[in-house]
Image (cartoon, rainbow, N blue to C red):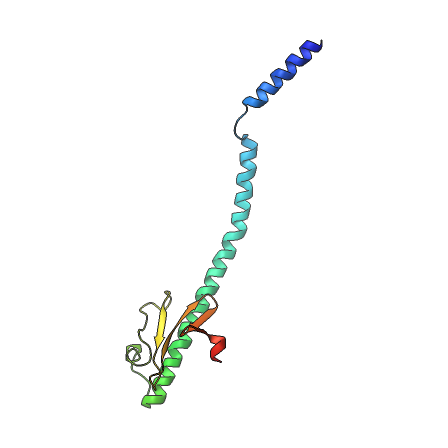
Length: 133
């Protein structure tokens, strides 16, 4: 009887050692978990992207507004178009305001610089906006 028990135990161990890979149930559970996490994460990512794009557009528009106001203060009139700002107040006017761009500004007294936006940080002539205020 003892020998039969040992043989069955050896046979059971041999079968367990021959098993390789995952069962169908294990794979379905993992795929379901990935699907649930994706269903939660994708809408959040989409909302964050839209919010960031909106914030960038607002920042670009504020920059253009500032350049227009500076132009008005120095010329006494508003520019006929954004291209008018390019030589003296903005180094280049981006063709696509929604695209990522670095802007350069030129002040009326020749004191200009460049700034770039990255996330929620703005850098002007290698200084943070907080240092300029």
